[in-house]
Amino acid sequence: MSIQLMIVCLYVVLLFAISFYVKHRANKNPMEYLFAGRKLSTSLIAFNVTGLAVGAASTVGVAENATQVGIAAGWYNGAWAIGAVVMGILAAGKYRQMGCSTIPELFERYYDKKGRLISAIGLAIILICITSLQYVAGGAILSTLMPDIFSMKTGMIMSAIVFIGITVVGGLWSSGMSNMISVSLIYLGILYSTISVVDNNGGLVNINNNLPVVDFSWFSPIGGLGLAVVLGWILIMISQALTLQGTVQIACGAKDAKTAKKGFILGGALIFPIGFLSAILGLAAKVQYPDINPTMALPQIIMSLDPVVSGITLAALWAADVSTACTILLGAGTLISQDIYKRFINPQVTTAKFLQVNRLVILLVGLATLWLAFNAVGILKTMMIGLSLTTAFTVVFLFTVFAPSLCRKNSAFYTTVVGLIGLVLWQFVPQIHVLPHVIYFEWIICIISFLIISVVDKQPIKIVEKETTSAKVMVNQEVLSR
Image (cartoon, rainbow, N blue to C red; front, side, top):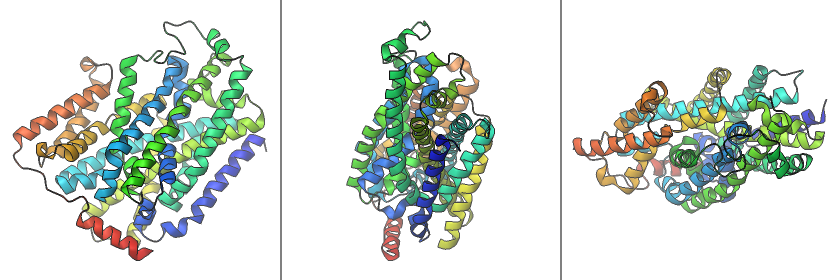
């Protein structure tokens, strides 16, 4: 067995050990399983946010994109970091104060049931899309590490087994504890590999001199992207950080509002550097392997290092995949089990049965997303399209919190519908591409729709206290379970 394989296998064993160690906590009730009993500390919040952000798109996807647009591809993580900080300042504490658990739940509190249903479906679609991309990156890592054992397809299947297994066993407790190890490993591996690869290639100047001649600078801050695209990425990441179920679930798992706020800001600081380091590795791979499949750029350049360094870094990439996939899978399971199954199909489900339903839903979602992974093309491009859909939810949330006088009973439902239709039109009607990125189109149509509804619809939204009766019941359940 190779040294690289041994390191990755040991890491996977450690993750499962953590999952089974915290299983007794997760088995207490759904609140412990889905929200870690609302007891996450600042550091666990920060590691969870970083683990969620630094996944397939933030490492393998950034390196893939860097081979086409230069170091500017690192702005994917830079934008994520900005989004996390904005979430910490504007919304994380408010989510925790409200005592809610999902965006659809919040929509029903203030709007109506159809707003909850349409938002649950939309958010679930986004999370399923993101999860599928984690399998793509996992397959790239395993097929590079062990080409005699894994093809790209079988590598994705093995990735699915590990991601689903860890999440089903330990829930958010498992994700939180695992992310402390994963994020540390990510930093160690990526930093060490970047230093080694740059040194082996004669420094950044020599890498730049050996890259193909193009009409932009490979090491320019905006490179082949352009300022409009970079700003678009930032807008996307702010949108998704404010309303994506993964971030909302982490904020709701904090022990209090102040902890949620501090944890997201710290998480933003941890997220920022990883993308630019991955982009440098991608550019080095383009120099060493000019004809390489872009998706394989990062795993391949890492395999060129000595066995110990490459093993640690490949385990770090696996860690990035695991950390994101587990949180996203958990979020998708929460939306489907809580906002669809419990709310509309079986409202009287018992606590024990509901815990079983959560685990079953996560298993089924994990298997379903594997099919999407086999058909995914371009990790970063696919991710950005999916995340653009969060614009509608973010617009509704911001108006609800900061301008409730403009909110109407049907605002959540119709704004979400317009966002969904807009994304479909952007994909299939190229004539409307008058803006540089779909995110600008989504923000314009969602804000206009919301404002039109505020004029046409005369029914105001419900007035809800920061901590609703249902939230107080949850708190009481937490106290009883301790």
